[in-house]
Length: 100
Image (cartoon, rainbow, N blue to C red):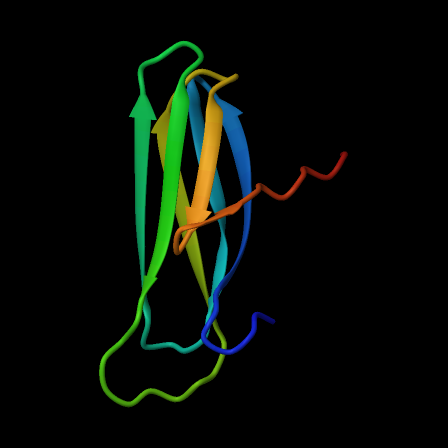
């Protein structure tokens, strides 16, 4: 689990029919925090994609219990697009795919 007040992310990418889909989970420090996601695709060559995840801290009283939230972010980009991912401003990497 992440340290108190921090978030942890596990994510993977699938590609089919000209589109990526990044799916995963974020472990938040409490259930009251909200997850905000954004994807920006740059039309450069090779394409660059910014995937931003942010946990907004809730105001008021909330029990500090780690909570997992699932996300799915589909976007159109080339298969070899360079994908840069951040959680609360810190870079993270995709979880390697398991061999079938």
